[in-house]
Image (cartoon, rainbow, N blue to C red; front, side, top):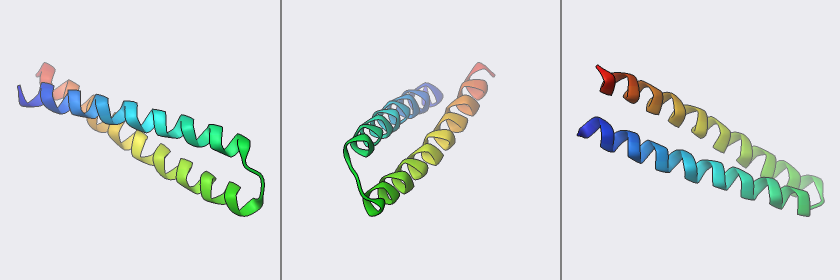
Amino acid sequence: MRDSQTIADLNDRIAILRSNISELVEQAAGHSGAADENLIADRIAALETQLADAIKLRDAAEVSAKG
């Protein structure tokens, strides 16, 4: 049960991160100016790193749950 809860939590986190990245991409399209673009690009990169980490954790939890 613990693994399935962890997987569900990670799936929720992954969905939130993907949504946040999409929102930032849309914001980037609407902004102009190097400072804004750099801040948004840095934030997108950080979220993409978090997303990759969450996917790795979820995948490992799924493998562990299958036993």
